Amino acid sequence: MVNDPAEYVWSSYQINALGKTSQLCTPHQVYLSISNNSQARQSSYRALFQHQLDAKMISDIRQATNKSMVIGNDTFKEKIEKLTGKSMHPKKMGRPSKVIE
Image (cartoon, rainbow, N blue to C red; front, side, top):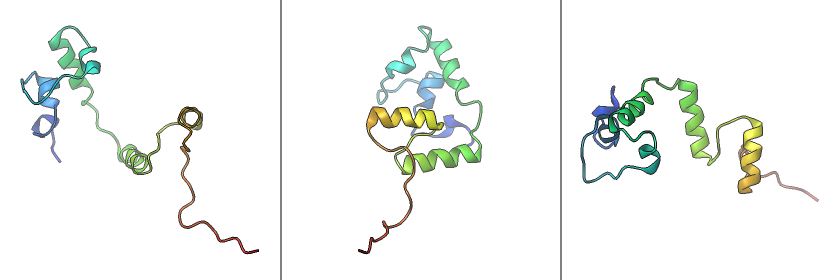
């Protein structure tokens, strides 16, 4: 989409990372908890964007999002399954097989 997150006009990046003021965006509590100092907070936020995700990670995120699942190892997925009661392992594609009696 863009080479630099600051170029994307519909993002809060300019506000959170660069200190731009806007009446359209309210700082999130997690963002505010990064630091009491606004410049240190902005610097830490910018650091989140210094590394690009590789193609496999992007693909994994898309697949997990499309299937309403989590990304992680089997132990993590099992914990999430216990907490939510929802399966975090992909089901077999297609219709269920018909049982003939």
